[in-house]
Length: 605
Image (cartoon, rainbow, N blue to C red; front, side):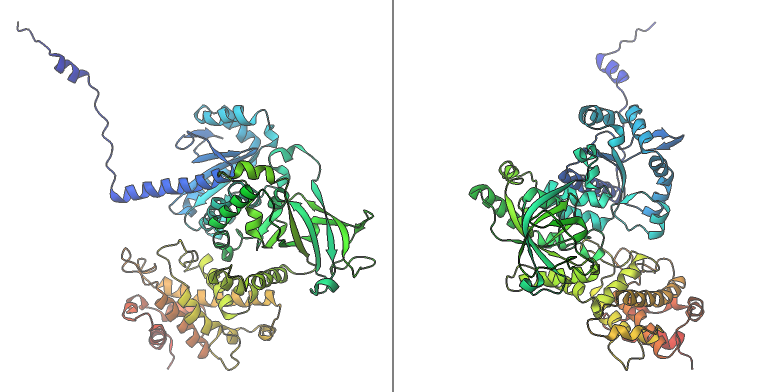
């Protein structure tokens, strides 16, 4: 019998485990993986700047909750706030609906879900963090849990309506907070709490106190006779420490993350270099800025007391109940301990130079924040004054202060001008585009933010497509939606300096509806690959500025010829429109395109 001799090399080869060969990713898969990493890092950096900690080993852990398999992408914790975080790059609407059951179960009993997190072995990092950083500070009942849903694509309003009690971190809001947190770091937590819907009284150590919190400051009341301001507009000047001001402050407009047109204000108004140089000054000179901060103050968030400590009551017109002094009067000002109630109109860099940062100056400035006092001059608006009038006054005052100082960039001042003149054709056109972008055939296809790529640009649509369609001032015009609109009060929109904001909203909604009807009909008769923005990747796409302006020109012709109709009637007339030669028209030929479409499909001989 032949003896078989095994060499050591053969033995090694035999016992060697088979190597796991990693799947080679395609260029598209690599790009998608990079986008996923970038999105996670973007959100993570924002939350870390605010003060949140990211828990490890959460992503990819599948677990059973309430009998169903579930998973989470991330968990962030800051003091007593827990954020269950989800990321998505694809179609958010389908993804969101799949998450609905899980989210409902979390919101149904948040305490039960926290108890589950503490017991689930696959999520052991939560238990570890809880034992080390939460257990000895807060009870489970004092924890505040929120679901943060992060999508880079716009989520339809109808889907948001179906999946409620979720904080939608829409991408334009992400960019807003990214800009904000990059400059003022942890001091942005106050505004982020407002975004989450968590009152400051429920955050961190505040939740342990049942008392309503406020602080008292000393100052003076300046009556209208001494300021020449509008009747009922009181002026108060007082000293407040930087820490107390930062907690209560907002810049220019309180609802920056709520209003589409506000996104970008912070990144243009907060100059990183300027903030840094001011922090250096505070450290080197060790003294306060002497200039006063100009602000507006919500009157329902303060109380004024006279020198005898008697409460001074303001009526809805901004006048004191009883005698109204025409002289400068000493006062004690009690201000609620709440976020976003003092609007900084001028002096934002001086205020936010004291922010809670992580730079070389923080150790020194941290000792100054609660000690150094800033002089604030605040405008008290009458309670009956509308929000629109208050914002208009603030914006006007900002422009007046900065007109000779070259502080604000032209783009910013133009945007503020739009806020000051909401009845201008440009402002109306921008609102109409926002309406078209919210839902319908152009839903999420119009470029609204500087970072969006591959969407329809708006400047030429506003100037050449919408302005002629919506014109109010031209009495002889017979081709505008204003002419078509049958509202008996519409003439009020022609009055100079009118305040008919509700009526204007009705006109915007009417115009959006009429444009959308035409677009619905066009889309229904196009091939699927045609109804998208034209690009090298989508060569069959017809959605260009020229196309949109051409369709708006079709609507003008329909109005002028008294042929405005229903979606169904438009659809009958547009049979075969998918074969129309849209791409033969150059960018400036939108009027010719509109006329040719009208003649071929709509004109009644």
